[in-house]
Length: 169
Image (cartoon, rainbow, N blue to C red; front, side, top):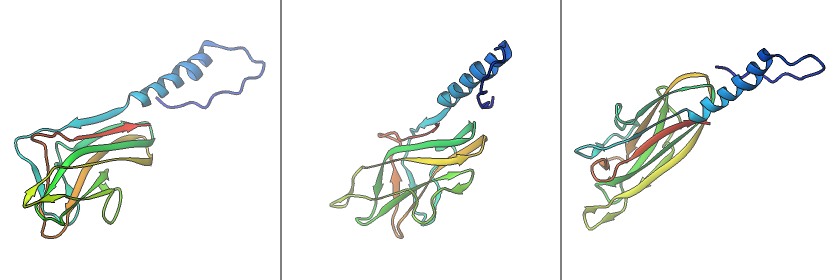
């Protein structure tokens, strides 16, 4: 269903067709946008890991969302915990929208993991971002990541379960 620009009324009679078009249909359009979201809560038997220094999918199946939009803006969010095998190791997150990384360079957010006497600590990592001006239709959002050279980044899906979501606004 599409939005119909409301009519500017003068002295013509109000018809059921007008009410259906300008009230019912436009309210349905607005409600559908509010109800339109996708999300995942990820768990698994082993940490997800990467040594990639260029952005790759974190998990092309579990951390991929498909959302059919009415066109406009979409909020995307992530929350989870990461670990690093090096004291100066960094984890970078990005989102691919329809196969294209949304932010160039080092992505949306970076976390240089805390390191405690050779033991990995769980470091929280989260973001909310606005993707503006998407066309109406089906869109795919994938969580992507990379790490600093010589490091292994890990995403905990065993004990602490990340969430990845998209919501049309």
